[in-house]
Image (cartoon, rainbow, N blue to C red):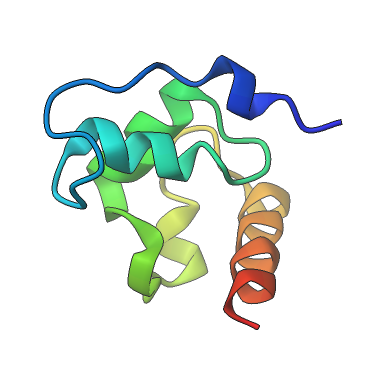
Length: 82
């Protein structure tokens, strides 16, 4: 059961605007295995994956992301693009 949506922080500021950092973190938390703190680190390191051009090696430089989690995130993003 996917429960991360229930744990996301609520909206604030310019909610829904792609340049709003709270909104970016909220979107990234929709990826499997990504919670509040990891979403913050992803956004700070590589930005939001709307046009995910970040190499897997760069994503793995984010503290808390190893090869397995990076592969899971990429697989999820590939499924969304279909």
